[in-house]
Image 1 (cartoon, rainbow, N blue to C red):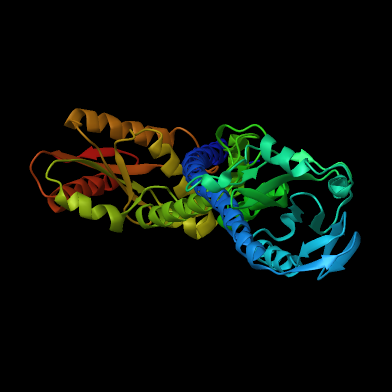
Image 2 (cartoon, rainbow, N blue to C red):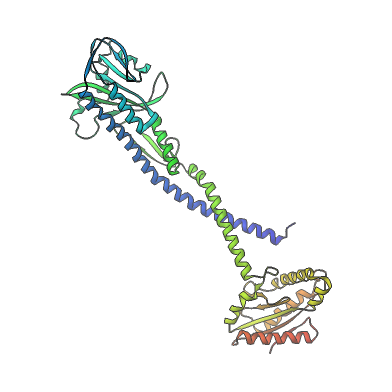
Length: 434
């Protein structure tokens, strides 16, 4: 069973560790939360820039559309360069498949698999290009849907966008679920006008998961914990460019931050704690005697030499050589340890106990008179004599001195002479220098 002192030391070290951990957690939490809030603003700009880039790339298609040749096609369905063409009646059809595939290539460089469909509707709806053709678009090439493009333009407020020098001449819809695939998507509508006439409507369908993928990639790249949905402690809401509906929210949750910093905080706190323990242990070994817990002579003697006021005792164990010779050095060490414990039990925390030699100790006191020091010395002597020490009757001899203006060397000689008198006069006694 560990001693009470050892148990108290263990609990004391545990309390220190948890205090360190608490401080580290607070510091890491504050710094990481601040880092995430700053990063959130950066992510918000990145999301906006992605959509602006999508719009910029898509707008270039109008130049291609206006300068491409046409071919005569009969009513039917065609497949050119990976693009489905649905012709509702015999007509001249613009050769757009190559341009649509180039547009897809450029957009996929930016958003990858989040590009869902590219479609180009002619006005009136005599033909439509799809990359790829999905079932939910079949309504657009059925007969009787000639006004569907006009309906979209009116609904999305895209009438006469050619008059726009700045701002949005296209529209991003709120997210909706595609009936056939149940995929959540957003559609970007870009009307192509020539001489104030709506010639065509470019539709780019984008998976709503683009935002999720962007946040996930950003978190992985910058080690953040930003959420794109759910409850957050701190959050910012915004609309995507050219969208006036379906507000999106980016935020940070305390729980997510805490989970992320917990393990690093524990590891850092443990590292700091063990560095502290190692430092204190090295410091202790340099300052204190391992056997007794008293100050080491080579550490404390420098302080003593700077002092001019002294109240000190020299304590020596009587007949210690006989103990070593009779019972062995292990027994002698045990005796020294217990005597040290008894001495510590009789002095104050502000007093200093020094292991001066093998079985010799020096105790220096603060603010004690001659009479008080003599009483203290007698108390120490009695505390050692009154009970057996490791089942042995042990006594000590003590010499003391009190002086207000004397070097340590002079004070030590007086105390040592007094100790000699204690031994000469029968040991187990206190002698104070005059």
